[in-house]
Image 1 (cartoon, helix red, strand yellow):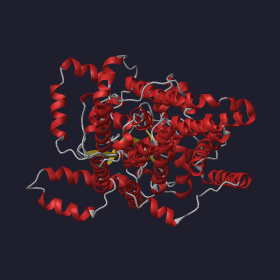
Image 2 (cartoon, one colour; image 1 turned 180 degrees about the vertical axis):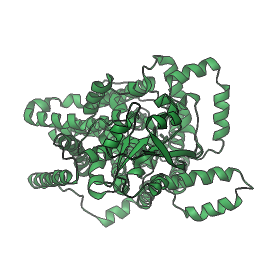
Image 3 (cartoon, one colour; image 1 turned 135 degrees about the horizontal axis):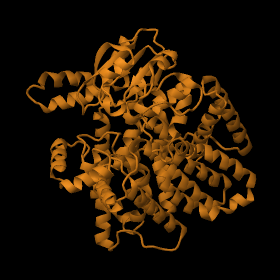
Image 4 (cartoon, one colour; image 1 turned 120 degrees about the vertical axis):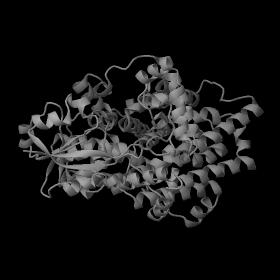
Length: 623
C-alpha cells in the first residue's frame, strides 16, 4: 500500500477529531495542539515499530532520474515545482478562504473552542470543517497562514499515483492509465489550488483515495486498506458536503470487503467513531439544530424551487462552457454581455430563481482562477479528441456494461456525477465538480483503442501542449505570478492610456497583490491598543483584520445588537461596509449610527475585488 497516502489520511482524520475533542475540553489553542500532535507522533512511532513499515520510500537517485527523464513525468515535475515556488513566494489569496474559512478558525481559536459564530454571514457556520481542522494547528502554533498551501500541495503530489491505481483497478489499460495519471493533475482546478488554500482539490484527493483503498481491500482482504477507505470517504464529506453523492461509488467499492467488519468488531467501532468525527456529520448536526436544514442553505437563501429539468440543463451548459473556455479569454466581457442580454426574459427569470448569480447568466472569466476553474480547456480538449477518435475507429464511446465490481464502481461514479448535476445551484460549477471528474473518465478510457492512441505522435504533441498551457497559466497567474510583477506593472501603467485593455490587467494584478493584506489601511487607522473590533460586512476577505494573529479579535455586529452589549465586549470601533447595509439592517447607515450613539471616525476606500470598483468603508466609534 502507498504508506505516505495512508499516513496522510489518518493524520487528517486525527486532526479533525482532535479539533472537536479539544473544543469539548475548551483547549483549542497552541498548548492543546502541541499535546495532540505529540500523541500522534508517539502513535506513529509505535505503529512503525510494530509493522516495520517504511514511512518514507527509499531514495534511489538513478531510478528517480530515469523516471523523470521521460516527457510526461518531467512535465508533472516542472508543474509541481512551479506550484511550490508560487506557494512559497506569496501569501494565500483564495477569496473564500480569506472571507470565511480562515476567519471561522480564528474565531474558534480566540474562543478556545468551536462555536456557532454570532454573524449574519452564514458561511462562517454552515460549511463543513475538513480543511479548517487541518489549518487550525498551523495557525495556532505558527501564527501564520503562509504554510497552509502545503496542505493542498501534499494532496496534489498524491494525484498521479492514485489516478493510476484507480484507473487500472477499474479496467483502464496500464499504458493508458500511465499517460493520464500525469495529465489529470494539469486540470486547472487541481493545478491552481495546489499552491493555494481552496478546499476542492483537498476533497477530490480523498474521494479518489477512498475508492483506491476500497478496491485494494477487495483484492487483498487487508483490514488496514478497508479502514483507510472509510476514513478517506469521511474526510471527503468533511472537505465539502457537496461530495456526499460520491459516497455511492465508495460504498459500492467497499461492499465486497464488509466481512472485515465482522472479523474485527472492536477495530470497526473505533474507526467508525473516528470516521464520524472526521466526516461532515458534526456540521450537519449543528446545521439541523440551528437552522432546521442539514446543509444550512436555508440560512442564506430560504427554500429553493424544485425544477430539476431547468437546473440540470443550466448546469450542463455552464459546465461545458466553463471547461471549454481557454485559460486566457480576452472576449469574456463581450460574451457575458451578449449572453445576459439575449437570454429570453422568461427563461432568465426562471434561472435566476434556480441558480445563484451571476451563474444564471452563463458568464465566463477573462482568465482561469482557482475560485472557478474546473477540469480546464487543455484536458477537456484532449479528452474530447481522444474519445472521438477511438469512437470513430472502434465504434464505442464508453466501456460496455458488465456485471463486475469495477464496472459497478465506474457506473456509480457516473451516477454521483449526474446526481450533483441535477441539484447544484452554485455559480462556479466547474470548480464544484473537482471531485467528480476523475471516476467517470474510466468509463471512456476503458474502451479498447486508447492504448494505441497514446502512442501516436500527434496525440503526444497535443498532450505536450496541455502541459505547456498549464505551465503558462501558472507563470501569469495573478495571485502567484512567476515573473517580475511590479516591473511589468510599471510598464503597463506607462502605456495604459494608449491601450485601455491594459487598465484591466493592471487592476487584476494589483488587487491580487494586496488581497492578503486588503484591510491594511484600516489597521493603520485603528489605535494600536484596539483588541476587539466590530465588523459589519458580508462575504469580504476579513482575515487580514485579525493580523497579527492572537493580538486582535473581530466580532460581527448583527441587526438587533445594542451599543451597550458591544461596549461590554470591549468594542469601541466598528468597521462598516455600507454596501448592502440596508438589506440586512432594514435601515440606513445614518439612522443606525444615531441608534447606536456612534460617529464616523474615518472613511477608508478599499478595493477587494478586481471586478468591483473601490468602495468607501466607515470606521465608526461608539461614543
